[in-house]
Length: 314
Length: 266
Image 1: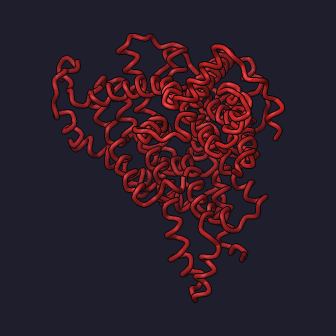
Image 2: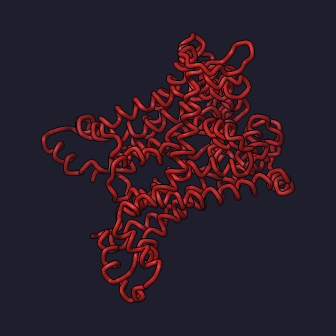
Image 3: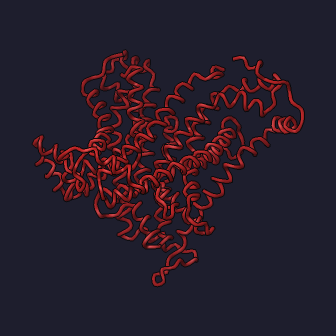
């Protein structure tokens, strides 16, 4: 590059002096750069976050429905009442199943893309994963509503492939079933799995791509069969990627309230509980207490993940 | 390298198919003549829904609002995200880790928490809900996308390029304009496009920061909960895919070519 040619002679005057000041005092430059984004995120965002979450130590007056501004633990304790605790366990259970399914479906895709696909196929895989990732969230939810509806495509295909009985048997099962797929846990979990699958594939693929081929050859030379190589070399090295993906799939499921509103049973999940509490119920303290749960769960998850080195796979 | 086994191939292609089948069905239902249910297979095919969408004023109003919000939020995010990236790319200082965590926080926390927190703050400061509160909410989580793209490119930009420019007599502003900006330009463009797509598509935070106005995702959400003419929603959905997919494709090619950027080889 011929940089020198384009640069005019040094200028004098105010801008030069300002420039000298910045160059000489690195701290000043840093401060100038950091202040605007910090004002926005540090004050506006973190401030509102704090104001909202701090309300979990207040309570609500049962009769007037107004917030009582006296510090109390009663709202936090209320989380453990049977009805509320039910919501929490249900949500965590759904998030766990979704994460497991994402890993199960996503791993082969990532594995193939990382180890067998040529450069062209790899670019194709990447785009094929990125496109659903970035296409509209609501559009994707809508797609599943179409598919899962009682009169929809899944039902039709099941019937014409002679699986109608199997589908009905599945829907007759106690927890996962329901009147139709679109109002069952099965439908909700499928939709969540679909929505967050790309978030699992990408970090797993990144982790797998970093496994050196020589390591796998060495394992083979030392007498390990393909199964053993996979179990004792590839899988442990891919785990940080899986954990990194799980961070996304888990936290995204914990906080979502739109999917359960459109697809799923009438039993509430955490996001819906927060939504109704802050809206129609007007119980901001309990909404804040509920909001603390995903934050704490994720903080715990992140600390564990950091110990496992999952962040290098992001 | 050995070839992939058949079960692996099937599982991998099956996974990809799983990612794309619902989108295909959305396209298919744009043309159905059935407007009250999701009956499969569609009883007949028609093009009339495209005409209906063209004439619905509420949809175009929502599209207009979404575009305006996305442009403004992207602009704010570009400025703030670039500043943040410039500060954090190479410098080492006390409190660096918490600050970089802070920039990622809006996207790491559930959208509903961000949304309610901002709503509460607006209420507390007595700011009425308007176009500006939507922009404020969107910019908050768009910053991180720009920041991520810019910080990755800045780390690859060799410091010796900047030193050389200064040695040759350019001042800090000239160096920024003539050396740094051309090198990070495509990364910023890519970050901006992703931010635009993110904002155009956002529904959760918007639910809490919008007043009576509806952006396109809000319009779609209300159609999903209380469907009227179902195929109209499909046509809009396909439109949304087209509008968000193009910037994403462009962003992909921009960042990919940026891999071989000048100065990366120290």
